[in-house]
Image: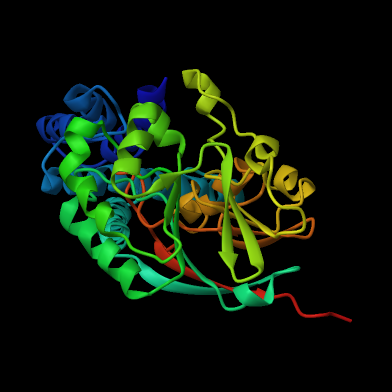
Length: 375
């Protein structure tokens, strides 16, 4: 079903774009074979590693596959728009309208160029996003406290060791009080990713580096990966919390498992368990990979939830679809029943669909401030 779904754009391109072109049958067949091979990128990924989520090809080939796959998808969208326009003109003129070959070639060039831009935007180092968040009842001692929020690193053949080292250096240079990573750190098993993940050991912050699992950790052995992260000086939060202290002030940092955890026999996300024993009255920052349960977190008295997972929707327009799949949340700041949800666009994204158009990746620095009185 997965491969069939990702084959549909290619089928549309073959039938509605390629076949009507004034080319020889041999040229059409050869072009169709190339398009089909590119469209099956995820099948080749599965054959390379046993998982569609971990393409174990050279980085350059992963980039080419993403460009080709993205171009096919965009071309399918453009062809649908052209066909829709032709149908409207036909309805007005009450006669058949032919689509000129030059228009077909034009949308193919546009799709290829946009896909190249999208891949370039996806794989570059994330830019800094500075966010100021007011927190109700924040102790004076934590006013101005800074948190670096990383998420969806998807360390892989595409986001490899040099990329990880650059992100670590950029995060450390911010001199934040705390670093948190809200899941989907990897794509691949430990044997495949050991070298690429190793730079995470160098992340440094006075109050430590804390990590929760995302859905991708459960694809590749959640328990093994969380233990491995602990060996890299990152502290896992699996339905648990810690108390951060500054003088007499206290701030609770809690983390929950991903909503997909039960599919692998792991415990589901449990905010109540994560907050059990937390000091009463201390503001709570909750790390939850997916944003969909934000209203439940708000009902449990959480002040700030940090999430990822959506990659911001990746492409303008597509973000509306992604929002619908995540209870309306897709990117940025939300007020959820008095709780602030900050939804990071992602430090990177899944190498199976590495395109960004109008939705940049981000390295987020959050500064906490005491909430001021409002009239």
